[in-house]
Image (cartoon, rainbow, N blue to C red):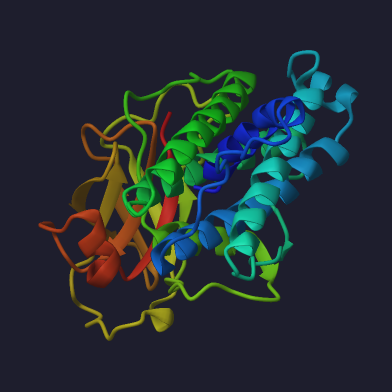
Amino acid sequence: MLNMRSSCFSIVLSLLPLAAAHPLEKRQNALPPVTSPQDESVLQLALYLEHLEQNLYHGGYNNFSEAQYTAAGFPAGFRDNINVIAQHEDTHAQTIATILSDAGYDPVPPCTYQFPTSTDPVSFVNTANMITTGGIGAYLGGASLLTDDPTLLTAASSILTVEARHDAYLRTGLGASPFPTAFDTALTAPFIYSLAQMFIVSCPRQLPIIVLPKLTLDAPKPPPNLQPPTAAGTQLKFSFDPATFLVKVNPSAPLYIGFINLVTNVTFVETASCGTGCVTAPVPEGVAGVAFAVLSTFSGGLNEDQLTQFGALAGPAEVVLS
């Protein structure tokens, strides 16, 4: 989502030589306007996530040396390309902030971040793959909301392709398939916003988006190169805190996991209890790549929007299957 603006920024740069050659000609609008509160909310979330990615990728460049990347099995130049990705995220964030400011809105500032699973080059790249996949899902989920000005959607589509290239490069570095599925998965604003909170220590300003209780995938952990893909029927173990549910739930009520995967498909499977705040559930047939698991009392019949609005008890947890 955030990426929508980077493309617009590129358009601005491409027009600069023309403006110099023809100073009396009126330049066409290159940065699309923000014409509705809905546009503003999409852009603020995009900027919120771009700040997260900025901090992540700059850390991946500054915290590990080229020798450490090489020793971990990454190809020559991998660290330098992490720096290129960081610069792309800088451009995205700067462009979105400019668009919001020009429209009279106050851009959301960066938060303080912590990436506890990013302690070496391999764990950093795995974390970056998960966050970037979530960012792609956020863009896909937000694209349908950008209906006021077609240039916003065009710009967003251009930035999405850059984010997808980032993710493919990360996955290739891990030895995984750069394109594990034919479709990516869209995420609603509350789902991606809730996912982002696991990396945030504090924020000078939060967005007016609901944060759902946390759902954690405890086991199994994906193999380092995501190969072989996690097979259908594999039991996944999740943990959560029932005391944090936003609604009252009968302790004896059956619980289900809704797996969001491949565009906006939701596949529900019944869980088995493994104690208080602990359930297991099998990977459903047809779920592949990266799925997003949501705990629910509903056994089916909900699409992703409905699951977001009234069906989610906790989540989502990102489940990397291949």
